[in-house]
Length: 474
Ligand code: ADP
Ligand code: ASP
Ligand code: MG
Image (tube, rainbow, N blue to C red; front, side):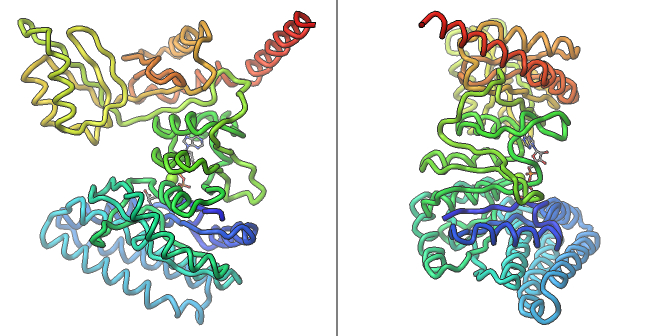
């Protein structure tokens, strides 16, 4: 059994959805389960509509909803034709009527809680999954639309919900098992789920990848395929670095580190369920049916490059906490960590000395109350618009000179480093720079470690080394 997830651009219009049908057909014998994102940009537009409604501009929100409705109906019409289209029009209309009432409600109460936000954003995946299920059926694939909220059971951490493994396994097997047993193809929306009480939740932005992995783990799938708009996981974000190359094979650990530190191609939590059950994950290009993409498994062959890839996470704040003069040094660090714990702060990088500590956090998740509390025990500075650049590779540990070479390349790009971290994880070197320096730093690092000349040199050197060893052992 294979779980196939198609991202926003892979279902952005009728042509893209036709390609999805062909890709799914090519996996027909492997019992596919299809997970789809909302059409490209729809989730962003739903976020915007929520903001407009809460700001009192209900007309603007409803106008945007009208455009969204036209886009969905036009796409359905192109894919299904009038007669078949009529069969799902009722369902689409009901979802849009619900969205309309919901936005009017938000405008009336002028408040958007995380719980209501999840409800609002769920419309995107509900609509796309209905249309894709019907479009595949019209093309001869025996699909059944499935409500993901009846499969994935989460906690009530709205906007960032986490699955409850046992409940999800049971519900997913109950719901999908019978469909797959009849050789039918379940089609469901990614990103959305529900609490045990049935309240809609979402798994965080970009969470459809995570949905696919959760479903794959619940069904003990043979593989999980993430179909997207690039040729797999690459040595850097191709939008930042046009020379980026596709990585053919990569380990779970390396890919998870890249996802966590900003490689948007995978939602950071995607690999956890796959690792737990040792299910290979493939990242593939839906624009290319013959895509070989990237294979992610527990053990990947060694890379010829020094690093597997470079990534950058933007939208980060750098917080420096220095013990105030006269404050007992003893207990300082404990007080800082206790404060972080009280706010459940999810810290990325930390650097510590006896009287000071610097840490980074996603700016959107940094509570101002935490900063106020730290100010009571220390001098605190907090700088936004920072970024973490992270170079990942399983072979870097114990190789002398690598860090020097990294920092030399960053200096050549005339970029100032604010904080360094190496050692906490044996497979990465990370450092903090200003957000607007990211493109030039990443390009310079990519040229240093991945340019064809460097790779050829590394290959020749490793050839020479193996030659020498062979001679010595003869
Ligand atoms: P989808 O809508 O299919 O989920 P996303 O936009 O979430 O697609 O992720 C794909 C994008 O991730 C690519 O278009 C690319 O710009 C970006 N990306 C960032 N880092 C990497 C990387 N290392 N390899 C491949 N893509 C990357
Ligand atoms: N549609 C959601 C988002 O844009 C989930 C996803 O695409 O993975 O965040
Ligand atoms: Mg994505």
